[in-house]
Length: 116
Image (tube, rainbow, N blue to C red; front, side):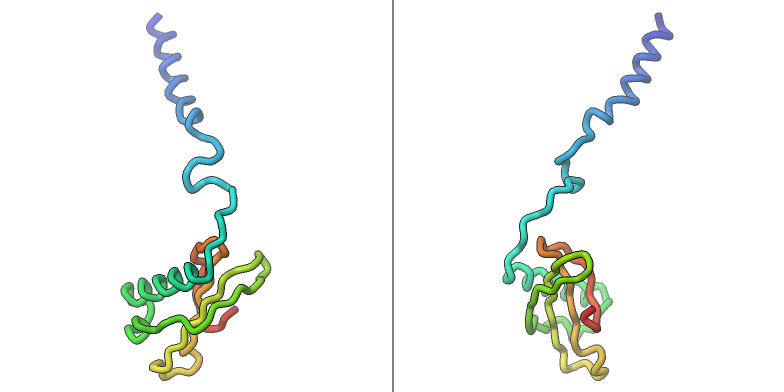
């Protein structure tokens, strides 16, 4: 009887996590998020620049830079928000314009100085 009880207990312990798995749970849902507005995208991109300044990934001169423009651009994987920041305080002309890329739902996808 003890062996049967132990086997049932082990079987229950191994199968119980499966009960909680399934669609629609937290961040693992595959449903697309609702698109954010242009204003929300500008705000998110500004926050991303500020975080990168705080982390030391961007020079401090980027800290007060406001977004210059925002467009929706279509890439291979679909449309994205592209937010442009210009910083004339940067001496290197190739590094004066920063592009922040967000999904239409507001997920941060990356940033660079080339715009591609």
